[in-house]
Amino acid sequence: MTPKILTAGLLASSLIGLGAAQAEGLPDTMTWTAYDVGSQGHSEASAIADAFGRAHDTRIRIQPAGSAIGRLQPLLSGRADYAYLATESFFASEGTYDFAERRWGPQDLRAVAGRPSTFGVPTAADANIHTLEDLRGKRVAYVAGNPSVNVKCDAILAFGGLTRDDVEAEMFPTHGAAMSSLAQNRADAACTTTTASQLYELEESQRGIRWVDIPADDAAGWERMNRVAPVFQPFQETIGAGLSAENPANMLAYRYPIIVSLADRSDDEVYDFVKALDETYDLYKDATSAIHRWAIEDAGVPPLDIPFHPGAVRYMEDKGIWDDEMQAWNEARLARLEALKAAWEQAIAEGESLDDSAFTELWEERRQAVLAEHS
Image (cartoon, rainbow, N blue to C red; front, side, top):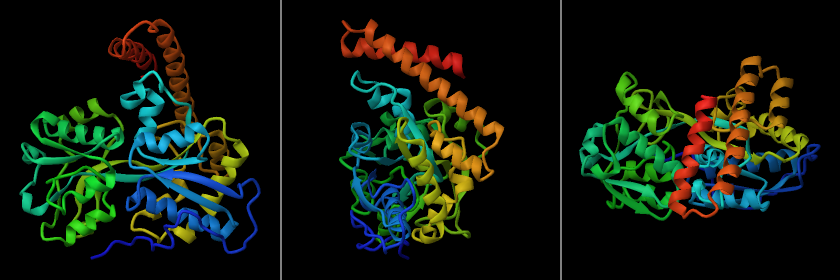
């Protein structure tokens, strides 16, 4: 079995449209960041970029990066217009993990849209791992500098009553390297989405593939997981390597990729971006096995990791999809972000003389106080 992935030509960084008139407000050229080549995020960004090129003659360069910092830094510095992110969008807006350092703090990010996705634990079939408890003592692949992947892995371990200390955590430099490690027999399990190209390679390798069961009815497990990262729901997936309607697997649901912009990006430009994302859907909806989940009525509404951009909200209102409950969610999420940004500024001023460890403790105290007010 082979994945429905894009050809080398489609994965090219610069994509030339076929001459259609450019949409009003959509830039002539754009730069996007995404996960590294071979990842689900990069494949989908490439397919959408190709559709924008064909429909609107817009040239798009996709800058791949295997780490959360690598995907965010170009956006924050103005060298990228949009970023195709995962849960690092939540961490960056909250000022946690890598973003708790003084040079970061809560970032003023906004969602353009976010596709419903799933996440689980693929294992090599010959590793004899069937349950989360079976991961004890096994080699589990982690990704250096990637809290988005790693915290999900920690949360899944917590579901099974485990921590990193209970497994052999093998750190790899990029997401692609971590995913390839199973077929190469350098790890026994990983944590990822279901359609990464390396997983199809694992499925066809001598080791084979098996997905570890994350049962939807284990209330205690879900409670342990959500204490680590409260962004997941149960989901039975049928799309991906080793999966089908006849062979589903219980795993997590969240949003990935999330198309992210800075808060100060033009409302009109974001509106036209979302409009193009919606109106070119038929051009990209069959490009990969899960990309059909970008249907705007699913991808353009909350909840997800960060507040929606006003330009995106306006488009969804014009489509008749955005309702009062969604608006209330967005306003509450914005209020939480603004409160965290204010608390960060106070922590920076108060902690000027503190070392990094003491500052991290101070910030976490301030952050928890904000969350208590906005829970």
